[in-house]
Image 1 (tube, one colour):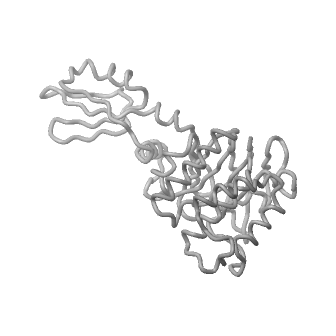
Image 2 (cartoon, helix red, strand yellow; image 1 turned 180 degrees about the horizontal axis):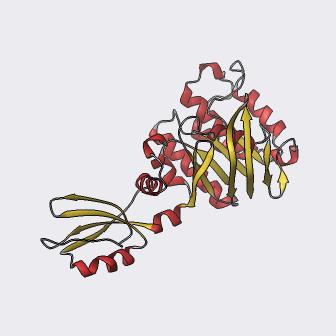
Image 3 (cartoon, one colour; image 1 turned 90 degrees about the horizontal axis):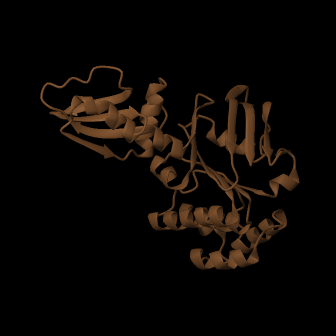
Amino acid sequence: MIKAKGVTKFLDGTKVLDDVNIQVEDGSVYGLLGPNGAGKTTLLQCLSGVLEPEQGYILYDGEPVYENPPVKEKISFMPDELYCSWQENIRDLKELYQALYPSFSEKRFRSMGEIFAFSEKKRIRSFSKGQKRQLAFWLKLSAMPQYLLLDEPLDGLDPVMRRQISSILMDDVARRGMSIVISSHNLRELEDLCDHVGILNGRSLVLEKSLEELQGNLVKLQVVFPEGASLGSGLDILHISRIGRVYTIIFRGTAEEAQKKLSPFHPIVMDCLPLNLEEIFIYELEEKGYAVKELF
């Protein structure tokens, strides 16, 4: 389990993280959202032990991560910008990973090599952005980490490779109990991967919930009322829009609770519609007073 408590970090005299608390359970996928400059990359660097917070602490299974090599051997961090000598070839990098990670699996490396189909002798300077990202996944996953930290990891990959890598990640979570923290601007992407989500804005975590809790706490209904019907107040409505006699209403609560509240108004038609992750965040954050356009 990853536990970050009261994490505060300054860079060049500017506070970029302010009292951030997150907890990532074993075998789970935590999605980290927020605008540019919100502190997502800095938080991942602190979680990986690259940076040390000025305040607070970060523990992996009760052990601090900063300057703790035995803990870091369980962690693999893929930054948004990939760093290595592009004069090297894949074999050179494989040997480096074998030296860094005692859990590195030659068998896994060979099996994943059939997916990515690169020659081990190929120099990295000739790779495209997407190919470099594929190589990073090949090496990171061959290291068999217990914790995988990813910063915008699917950027630059084509749709087929995105789907294939997502499938491998989910298989490692299910089969090995690997935990993932993933930063992304793509809400649709995270909806397919994550079971917990957190939003950073203004250096602080403004929302953190399980995806199940988020999806179970809001409901969208499309309703047609009799002519002249008036809804009144006290219905816990987060949002309402109308086209003709057709209302789209966002309620806090379950579908059964919302339908019960509307039944006294004798609706002619009442359908429950699915809410995607983007819609959930819009209504949750607007209720908290945040301008959603500033967050994504």
